[in-house]
Image (cartoon, rainbow, N blue to C red; front, side, top):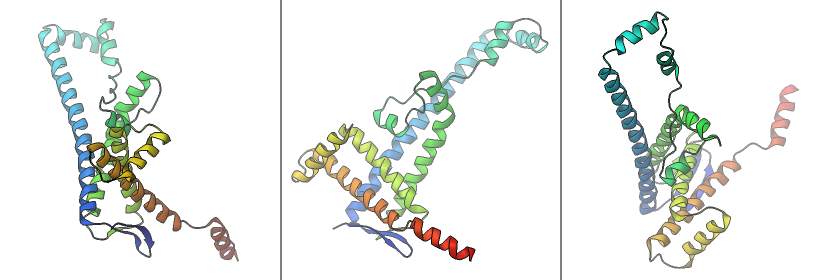
Length: 232
C-alpha cells in the first residue's frame, strides 16, 4: 500500500508499490512521446517549408540578378520587402493534451503564434527533462527526492495529471469531483474508471509532496527572529 510523501532530514520520501511506480513511470513516458512527436512535426514542417522555398527560388532564373541588384540598392522594393518580412509564427497543437501542456501565451492569435515560435521549444524541452528525471527517480524504492528534485518531480506529476484530466474531459471543479467519485465507487471495470483511479492517485501523490514541501518552508517569524539575532 502506498505511503504518502513525507519530509525527512535529507529531503522527501514516499513508499510506493512496484506496480505503482511502474504505472507513473509509464504515464511519464507517454507524455514524453507526445512532446517528442510535437517537436518532430515542427522540425519536419520547417524542413518542408525550407525545401519549398529553395525550389521556388531555383525555378526563377532571374533570382540571382534580383538579389545582386537589391544588394546594390537598385529598385525591386517588393523583393527587399519579402526578405525583411517577419518569419511565420507557430500554430498551436491540434491535440487537446498538447494544447493544455503547451498553452497559448497571448489572446491575440498573431501575437500568440509569434510567442509560441519563440518560446515553445524551450518549454517543451524543460518538460521533457523533468519527465525523464521523474522516471529516473521512480526507479528507487522508496522514492527519494532531494530539495532540488522535489519541484521537478512535482511538475512532472502535474503534466501527467493535466494529460489525464484532458482525456477524462475535466474542465472545472465539478468535473474533478465527479471523477474522484467515480474512482472511489468500485473496482475499475472500464477504461474511463481505470483512468479516473489513476488520476485520483496521481492527484493524491502530488498533494502529499506539496504538503511535505510546505512543512520545510521557514516560518516568517523564525526568519525575522534569526535576522534580529544576527543583527545583535
